[in-house]
Length: 220
Image 1 (cartoon, helix red, strand yellow):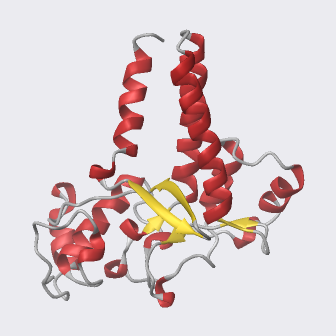
Image 2 (cartoon, rainbow, N blue to C red):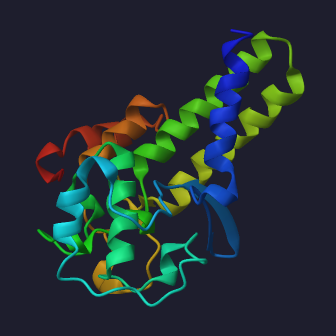
């Protein structure tokens, strides 16, 4: 454990480093929450699927934003080549390659906008990771680090319920960073919501039953 723990900390730090683009601050009701997303700033086709990506992007125009300022895909207008390449890469990073949850428009590969989406499952996994790190640090006798990760887990749990949870529907939804209502996926429930149960984010029994009791509503 003493050998693995520093490696786990390094991976966690990579996800939380603002410079990687995977950590996002979201302000709602005068509170700022930090959550994670899948992200790529690379504006070229994927090496493993170069031809497929190149052909998919053929109908799209070249983006007009400077390639020196691509840490946020918001710099590019949707439906242009570089925007598509960034988001198709991020979709592949997620392991959900590919899912309707990443698309701004149904049945449209070129409308993929993974960089814009704060996923329920990823943040549930990060919550579990923070809990594990807190436990490992405590086991190794590092009380200060254990307290840090424990507080981080509590903050994330609060962020998940504040940003990704709908009290009226008693359900969790991916959150879309875009301000364009036509691209907001918050009304679509995907199979990733089950991860909040497996990773221990939800402890309320009735809420667990509500999520488990609606399998026919889930999209992939």
